Length: 237
Image (cartoon, rainbow, N blue to C red; front, side):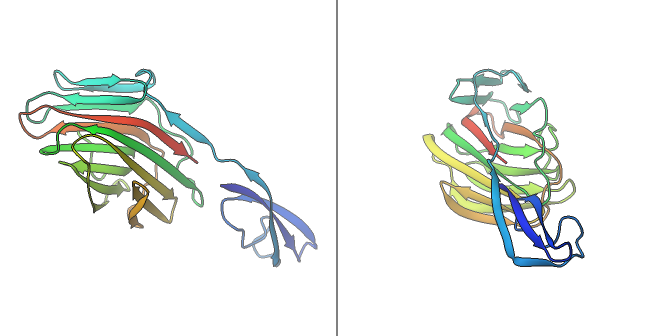
């Protein structure tokens, strides 16, 4: 949350003010000024901006895939389906990037829901925010999000050249379920990953630096069709 702070500047012998997501440690007018650190107080809050992606239609998105693929919005969720031939894919991504994601000193929280994972073997699924929309998704492209291999969830991020990826130890249940995926990007500091409210891993290397697209993607690795139902997406910044 962004707050307006009042700070007593001893050098200026007056109060000065600064909007920030963290407690200021210096005078905003001049960093060499001496301040009274005991005087710092929050005087105003700026409520977080919440954006919700609901799957009423595919307006605002680029979508496609291999022969027979589907990107089927159902209001409460979107169904991604790819056909029963190895390496077939289905994908959808936002037409434009989410703005003001990577401002140093700020944080962004994201929530995605999985409602149904029809198959739990021989598939790759990417649920992420990425500066690239390559097909298939690049592992080192600037991004942060989740990669599902079979049914195991991995936490992943990259800065455009190097990737950090960790096994969360969590398997998405087969069939209908409610799996809640949360991430908090503390820009320039670290990236927190949660599943069903439980902390799984914190990354502090190869953090993303670009404003991202929302990119959802599924790929089959065998001659069997694959599909996933993804619920609404929340972004708070």
